[in-house]
Image 1 (cartoon, rainbow, N blue to C red):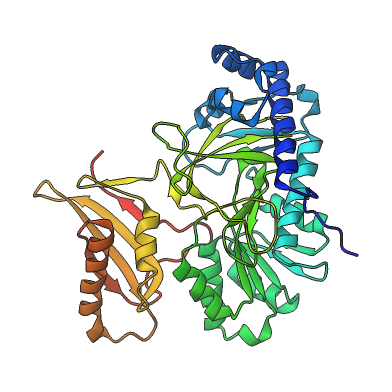
Image 2: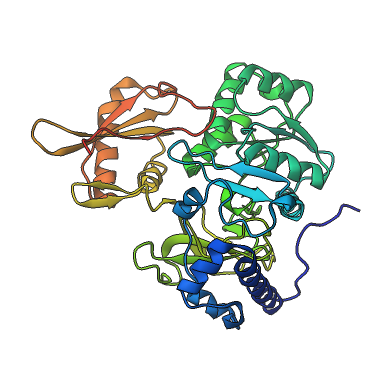
Length: 430
């Protein structure tokens, strides 16, 4: 019998009781083990004994990426350094890296709840999992591999890129699952189609991490590869790494592991809770993380809480897919726009492909101008492009209230990426 990695709570009340105990432990552990947290909690006038209910989380101060950078090389460390068995760093490319430390228990917990992701995606020990995400200081590759090995499937840790080897191993090892960014998934789908390999491989599922995948992109990948299913997997280095939740086969939202962290959805300006179905910033507090616990950590990721229970029957709560980042907002002629809004509008137009670029420029007239370069679907006649450009511009105007210049380009003419695709190019003077 295959081991289950799901929590065994019988009711939502049991889960909430578990969260309260975890919150109390975290505050006490951080207060007693970390000079940073002792000072920050002291400034907020909070002591561990003050946490008597889950509502008391609102008494706690916020932490942010700035705190991680300021505390380099061991930010938030709440254990003796001799207990640290590994460090990881964020994959960010600017400024001081965000370093996170791990005890052996942290690693074991991470592997266990990542195995839960594979279980929720319906994998079995006979599956062969081709891991096409980055290895090194960042958490991606090793996280997917740890979880796979804990779950009991076969891990094939190729890493990103190297399309020839990816294709060869899909054929030779008959990999059934591929873990990658959505951009890499599209690149592989188009390459497999170009090489006429679809009937030679056994790929059934893809798990996408590290970037938002649009409905149009997912549909295109599924059609090209004839996949059974695809799943979004969230995660960040600060919160162990990837694998902190997964959308189940019902695709009603992303189940998050509420037995390992508390999720708040807050207005990024007021830092107050948003309305029940409102979009806000994810703020997380860990419940059992030893080396570098998080207390009300501002992730900058935007989503909304899914209010209904999933029809799969799981007690684990859900949030929506990541809609963007609070620091990714574009201000264009006085209108606040998130890239995901453009993505959502374009996904509704059947004649266009999923790849696009948004270019922002300030021209000689002193005004800001937006150009959207958008791929058409394969086989679209050139004579239809002008009408499609007008229709896309009208949809953007009606739904986002900005007037872009739309340029329809040929299918597969925009660059493809083995990691995350860059789609927003803001060339305006800062």
